[in-house]
Length: 446
Image (cartoon, rainbow, N blue to C red; front, side, top):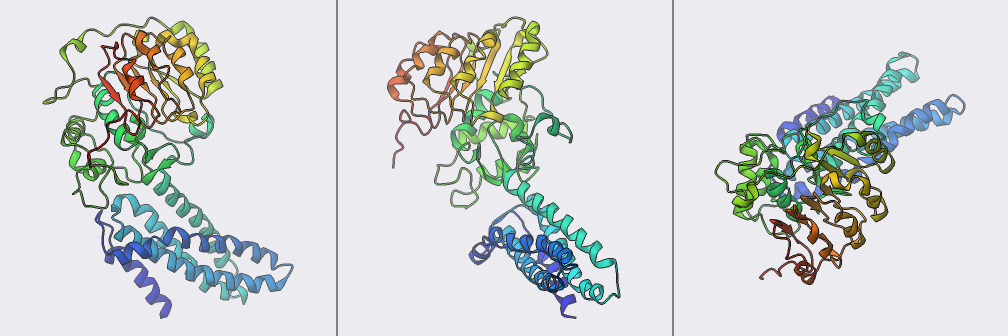
């Protein structure tokens, strides 16, 4: 009777404390935040049970210990799942984000309780197979529930993001159209994200499993599959979070950063409303750029004869040189996201043979220094350079003044100074330059 009551109460929790995307009582959030700590105890105990059961064939005392450990695991599982549901409800998580992990945890807990009850009949010989079968199922559920929790924290691709290529190709993966370096996304949306969101949603720090440093990561979403819902800003979790009241704990950006400006919000709303395209260069109702920038984009030449060399350098450095489009003359995009923590000036120098064909260099979060500008200056068709969160200070920034097509430069979270920015004033084509969290950034008014 007691066991039935416990199971009934557990199954009632998801409806009693249904996650709805809104924060609730402080006591729920306080207790709920112990869930990440509490959840590891039953996992360790459950993994120990089969070891003790097998060892019990040699030492019977170990089998007795297995029963005690399994009982402790059942009690700890109940505590962990209760804390998890309080965290999901009190912390303002959307039900779409936590549904898989929540129900996996509930089913696992009920399975552990069932396993505990079956063990006594297995010990007495009344049932010879049910307990081992359910125990195996519990171990499988433990792995699956842990995976759901990892995906909730670090994103759905946390196991495969840095895996070798052959492993990535084993499972399903989404593909997206090429990103146009002069699109609305590159010239307007990504700069907003870079300046306001990237410190919490890129590299080693990925809150909610959401990365915002590339179009693919943005569209993949994080813990929720609905971070961006094309044509529906009202259904897009990212848009919901940036338009919350200023005193709301889930408002983005967080950590004391100022909210997005009405203009930035308007750009994001219009971009999502009109399809969240990676290549569209116009938005209805929004003024994108000065008239002189509508001139035809210069072509970079045909690099198709370098295909084998491109594939070799991609394999050697772990980078990607992606085509902008099916036309070779539209150029290549340098992507370093998979190796950003180790990509250096020496690696960039190895790309010199391909310099005339690179139109977009994504070097954010890498180890490149001011010595990289000599190589970047040789990429004569560069239109966009991402250097956010790199060690540069801008002392060689003036070397970029030879880039007559450069329109976008992101220097956020670097040590670039105002004097360094003065050195690139001759760059009349430069439309967007971002210096958030740098010595060159304006000092906010208190």
